[in-house]
Amino acid sequence: MSEERSLNFIEQIVEEDIANGVNDGRVLTRFPPEPNGYLHIGHAKSIVLNFGLAQKYNGKTNLRFDDTNPVTEDTEYVESIKEDIRWLGFEWEKELYASDYFEQLYAFAVKLIEKGLAYVEDATAEQIAAAKGTPTVPGTPTPARSRSVAENLDLFARMRAGEFKDGEKTLRAKGDLAAPNMHMRDPLMYRIKHAHHHRTGDKWCIYPMYDFAHGQSDSIENITHSICTLEFIPHRPLYDWFIKELDIFPSRQYEFARLNLTYTVMSKRKLKQLVEEGHVRGWDDPRMPTISGLRRRGYTAASIRMLCERVGVQKRDNMIELGLLEFCIREELNKTANRVMAVLDPVKLVITNYPEGQVEELTAENNPEDENGGTRTLHFSNTLYIEREDFMENPPKKFFRLGPGNMVRLKNAYIIKGESFDKDADGNITTIYASYLPESKSGGDQSGLTVKGTIHWVSAAHAATAEVRIYDRLFTAENPAAEEGDFKSLINPDSLQVIEKAFVEPGLLQAKPGERFQFLRKGYFSVDPDSTPEKVVFNRTVTLKDAWAKESAKGK
Image (cartoon, rainbow, N blue to C red):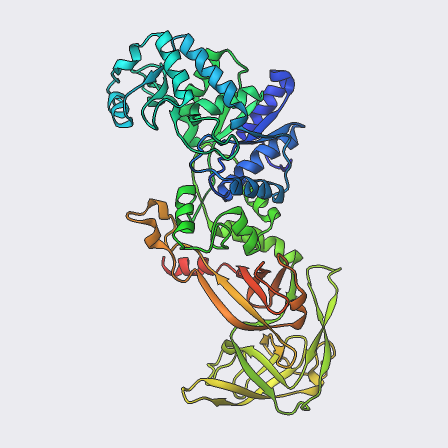
């Protein structure tokens, strides 16, 4: 957390609590994910906030899995969540689970029944919803609300014992049926689910609802600052009510604005749909806003933390431009990524006056932004590959790349002059012919010529073959969740383009998964885990410039 900026409102609260000796000046936060999917970048903001607060104020953070719904949970999700948190650069104090507290939560529920503040309900979900009324019309009690304490204790014990079917009974808190806050109108505390739990097995067939499990779990752990997103503001009175009536440690809930990003969706349910229906290749597909997807695409933990820092902590929801995340990764990779040459749409270039069979070694700088970046050796020969877009048969006046009669510099090599070309039967250029100026070698140019264009290349005899995956925004709409109809109809059909045969410098065959490079003039790329010793696979992390900003400006 940067010391140079002003405090956000949660930091102000924490500092006031410390100054006033609240909880003996102790700071203990928690990150409480549900293990029902992979974490996305919205969760990253919560992770950075919770763990960052604890780090700043010499506190600690618990990782507590909210595993109260056995139908949707899996140990795969638990492990992925732990991996993502560690990758972001954080370590938790204790690894805990709401299921650790099932016995304690059951005892809390019994206590509320004994106080006449909870009862076993027979009504269906539809009947309960109808009896709750509306925000302007008070609810009406169901017949079960008048049950005796003894009858409720008996029924709740039988619910636990498995005597009833799913949905046959629930446990509700006895709140205020006229409360303007609908969450206070006899909320559900427990429901029956005869399902195998990933940690407790078949021991339980009743499971606490989030609103009952969350605050009590915070209290059991003596959490000082329970930080949630804004949608939990209406839940806070209930959070406080349970703690007060149970007379347990008074954890406090505070709410901040979640991170919403353009051109994607942040609903775990919708992300799961994309995975299960095959619209993407998995939770870690580089088009996904999941932390694992961003990692596979080539984003760094530092760039994601930088985004969270720049966005800040607000009390009002807003939409963050995807371009800001891309800016953050460009800022980092510009300083750290080695420059290499890769030709994605190759066409053959033959230098007619360079001796056939001769191979020359040239020196190239790895990263001009890093004084300790070092150099590497490139092999130069008379047959190269260049980008097809770098040659034009009839170049216009301000085309500063290659064409008949046009001169251009080959990066780290020589100035060449376009001469002629061959075409196939379909009119596609197959080979370009050019001559080079021997006295124009980079680093010792004696030609006296100045050319305006520089293009990249690889030697045909030495190039390695690579697969390159070009990723773009997953959706065509800026805010898919706000559009009418099925959000999946807005999936960008061009969100993935696969180049099966690009040519790259041979040294890139030794690159390891996760290594990042700048392909000169093309963008930043990361080595994908699908790579093999025979074939390296690259994912485009981000373009060199914000191409979408230009497109947006055109439309205005």
